[in-house]
Amino acid sequence: MIQYLYLGRVGYDEGLRLQAEMAGLVAMGRARNVLLLLEHPPVLTLGRNAKRANILASDEFLKRRGVTVHEINRGGDVTYHGPGQLVGYPIFDLRTLRTGSGGRMGPVDFVRGMEEALIRLCGRFGVWAGRICGLTGVWCAADGGSERKIGAIGIHVARGITSHGFAFNVTTDPREFELIVPCGIADHAVTSLAREVENPEELPALEEIARMAAREFGEVFGETVVEVESLAMLREQAEKAPARIPAEDTPLRVPAEVKRLRGGGEGPIQA
Image (cartoon, rainbow, N blue to C red):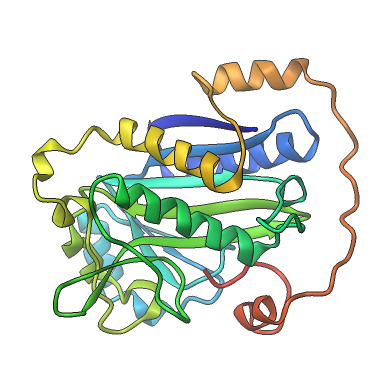
């Protein structure tokens, strides 16, 4: 089961705190897999592999624009979050998920699943989207063949529990990405759903698109999706649920792709 909540606009610090809280509840078995869907004020986030040089604006300029900067433990480089962007934080226990072949789902499988959910979400609006070999995220292609990124993904996995997640540009102004080298990739074109559809004024509200995204997550991961009305209700349910002692994760052989994405080490994967 996936329990999802739409939280509206949430400050980035609060988003980090909520992720930690939900990860604790999922680890203890007091909550099922939780998908937090929200929107952030303008913020730049630097993943574990990020280079400060990929922020092109000065600290003074960012301060004047009201853009904050956070260094975090997800994989990947630098990205932008802001108004008009649907941000999703899946706090999932990977040990409860299975691949299509019935095997245990690993971090790379999970990232590919998130990509698939966003690709399907684009398809609901008649927008073709797909992947680019060797890169992570979701891309739209122009008639001339140039690709533009519409969805960024970066996760962290600790003791089998995922955090961080995806950023899907709905009505986000792509010019905001001029503050950075997005994901550390030069000449990285960015787009939004509003720029890809024929009638952007007919797009539903962000909350409805969040609901559609949650349904796609359920389809891709083969889980029932249940909307939770509020954090208070989720916490109340968690209080009533019996806690369990978090099991020690069984060590597994780390796939070569994960080693490459991690740069040979442990922790977050490049995504």
